[in-house]
Length: 521
Image 1 (cartoon, rainbow, N blue to C red):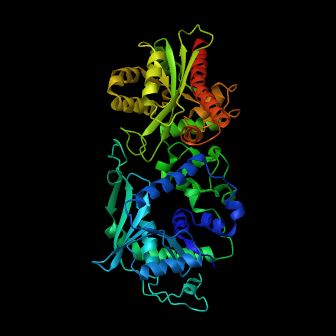
Image 2 (cartoon, rainbow, N blue to C red):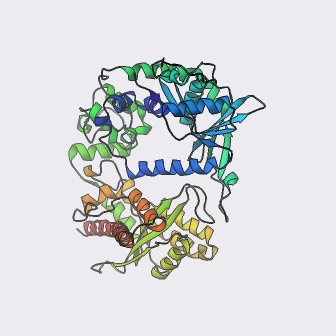
């Protein structure tokens, strides 16, 4: 019988079969490597938890998950240790390591804290804590050595006489989005300790029943038949083993229809009709205009193009054109003065300047900060030097670049006027595609430049680059700014970062160029 961790339980609530494969068929589950984004989430969580522990200077850390660590947990609880980090609990087939337990002598019980690298409490945090509460209340406070293990998990080998851990208060420690760093890191200002006792207690019984159901389901040696639970979710919400559990669903399917996650009944209707291929969708099913265009472009294999509207968009641009892109690092813990949790650190930009449509090639400017201090001032100074006070600034996803400019202007008031002027001249090239003025079947409902570029400028690609997406760029910058790498390796990473960011802005230029050519036909 498997031992179900709280991570398994949370994953079970999302997709049961995915966790069954994780336990019984790790060869399938582990085929998908963690993305750079997922690795960053794990690293961020570890960083935030280490800082949160400093709020409890008396804490004792349980470092492992073995039987000896379970016994140590029981002993510390019996001694009423003031604070325990990562106490390990195993009982009746379930396992959990609590982030922080704090003894409350007035209540003769324990305060349970869960540390989350988020800026607010989210619903799944309640279920995470309810799982722990159920397990802790089964745990023994009086370790008495037994000679033979009992129970499905062998937890009684720690000598447990079940009388449970009394839980006094339940809280989530999360990052404070209003905190702005000035000088040394203020941990009390950085974190919010939010009491969620009432919310968790309301679902404890529900979660207890769900835990039993999960244990029964995941203990079966027979693989569950049929589709996994993600079959009724949009593509972005699919589990890592979706393609294995749903072999009849094509790589590009009804799950990829734009904003289908907001039309769950519509998606469920298609699934119930056993319709997965976009070209099989019945005409009588109603969709939004954006969804209709995506489906029509695929079914008819036809480009949908509004030449007049594209001409108006491009005709409103004024030369010189500046194609601009930032690369940033979203630090959960503010590293520099003026930053709040998850504020983006703008460490790089690429800029292509086109003086007129007659120019054969645009002029290129670039900036990359490789030191460990705040890049904002150096970036602003460089940008101010290379971008004129006239002409349209073209970006892809206006909201992102505009927010970065606003933040720089807020941190550095002397650059506010300049950043405001840049924002006033920004045009979002993505608008042509998000407004559906140009729809191609190979966009697959996306307006990402990674989908648009291969259609309009197939000679350009990201595949020949060492860095191909923003998550990797962010992690790579961390390595050269904060890491202790050999200089040769740092130089190579810097070269790769410059090549990646340059490709983004040249890609925008190439897309603009192809659209401009189409209008001349």
